[in-house]
Length: 618
Image (tube, rainbow, N blue to C red; front, top):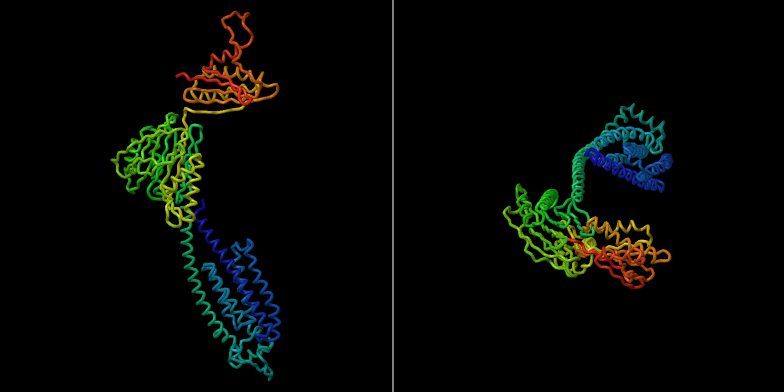
């Protein structure tokens, strides 16, 4: 995270780079102005001596190129260098100095341009530096112009012609030596033109530039003060933003992830209106056969709501793990705790449900929250229970627990009012009817697809309208623990026996069979698999093994494309007869029949299908 000083330094840096670019633009437009003036001199619009015109024709192109080329510096890293501003200021001032020497009649406005353009830096020190530079250069430019530039007759006591050795010479065409003689002549007559130039031309211009500089200095100082305040404010905002981002990350980190563990399928989404929100959702296993679902919406927005949300979430989860399936008692205890020391008068709407994964029974309590949608047999509807009082309002509130029974494939949709109260550009609400319509159109979707599709539908409805409230959605699909179906394909090779045992043992252990029963069942499975591997195929083949559980019945189905063979046609061996009188074969399938509760065979679609059934002992 950036420190306050780094943020302030960055703001000053960005301002200086912007000012450098403005100054380069000023140099470029000065070059354009010089080009226009040069063209006017070339066309004879302004009358100057031939000698001076020659000098102008040499100097002006150089100045135009030098000043105009500065615009290309903005494409390089030079514009970011700390000393670049002084280079530009001196370049601008020296260019005006040169022009002022050649064309002194219009010098004041150009010097003022130096002062004005430096205001872009909002820096009193740079303004002072520029003022001193201009004052010095203007002094020398004024005296150099007496002998080199376009003569201002007023400097020579208003004389357009000077008398040199009895000859009248035009001041515009006078040579350097002739001008010096004339000034010395005037000084001998008591008319010190050097002093008068200083007093009547330099001092008044300096006073005007001083006034302009003073105004610029005051503006720069005031602007720098405001920029400093803005920089500190930006630093504070940056720090707050960074802290809010951390808070947002923490808030998202406590939200549970998608669950698809074979027992259940659930997916949640939260999109706060600000960096942090007051909505939350949660789901967690209380034990192996119960899962809790929670969604809540804290009144208000921002940090206070987020803090209250974290408190509520922690409280409800803790109480749910303590009281387990009594949702009304959990809500009552949560309400009492939230009412204590609630000086901010914040309240929270909340819905808590606990699902019995074996029976499908859902116990739930609604504390002032939105209607819950249930999808059953391809139809979406809202639960019609009456919501209770919000949490955190009255510590004596008693809550009611409701019950429904879910079937495999049923879905529950929980949401906050940010969903139904989303507005479009015409101030129309998304509403419960539109939500129900979406539910009925998408009954076959899994929770994640359902939730993401709903969020997309809300965004499409809202269009470019600003999101005013947190949007939180949680979808849950119930799958009965009493039903499991899994399949695996194995090569018809004895080397696959260990993989078959791993597959079956894992599922049987998960279902709750004892180690002894698992060993016996694996013995039966081995007999069937060995027969297929050794006799079903002349070359390579495969065996598809499917395990399914329904209530207390476990079924293994073996399918292969080998030669048709019904092992049940073999005559059962007489195990009571002496060994020498028994027929060879048949003992393995006999053992399978004894271990399993049901064994049946059929040949269907060119496949041998052998089904083994075992009932779990209670």
